[in-house]
Length: 235
Image 1: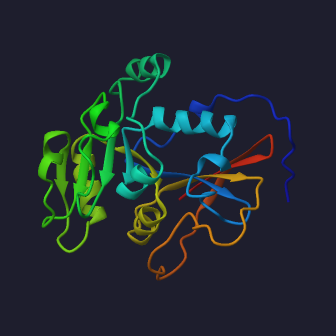
Image 2: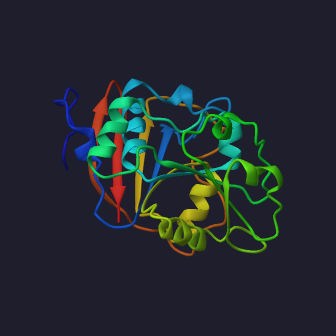
Image 3: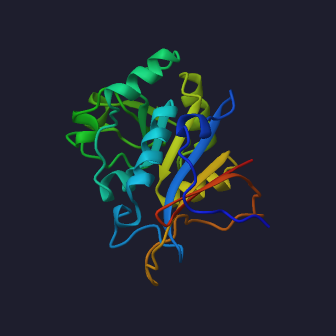
């Protein structure tokens, strides 16, 4: 057994969270100690300054941010922007200045006037199924179709990577987390444990159909900051 002690020295988060030089899909979630993914419908009460630092670094490192339409609405997402310093960091490493926001929506029931579209520095992508009607969304986003009755996530991810979006970060929500896991697409989970007991009733960080078998991940690192525990697991 190993003891993780508080007060560890500062680290270079960009280096610590560096991914292999290959296509990679990483999930980032925050949870209460008793497994709640939100408090009163929002993840913000579970977070803190250190969690926001990791959150920002993971966005800086990705080519695409993959998120479900429900999460965009419930968390009232902002357009995917980075500050000048993080944009410069990306450009120095040959990356595009901004990552691309990718929204999964089986029904295309998103408001094209939402700020994730209206204020986006890079044209977002909406992933949907073949029989959905994008309507006015096609004016504000690129439409990627994958699957018929439901969104085919492996096919969608393959299309994103064909566009050069190899490093994908997903912030959920729970249904997308469950679907990505069931499809065998998850390479890594970054999990922040918040020192709160949210009580029964709140949704867990993953939902959906049961898996055929549990999937094993390996702990890569653990950090502690003011009661928040940062865990990084990967294949």
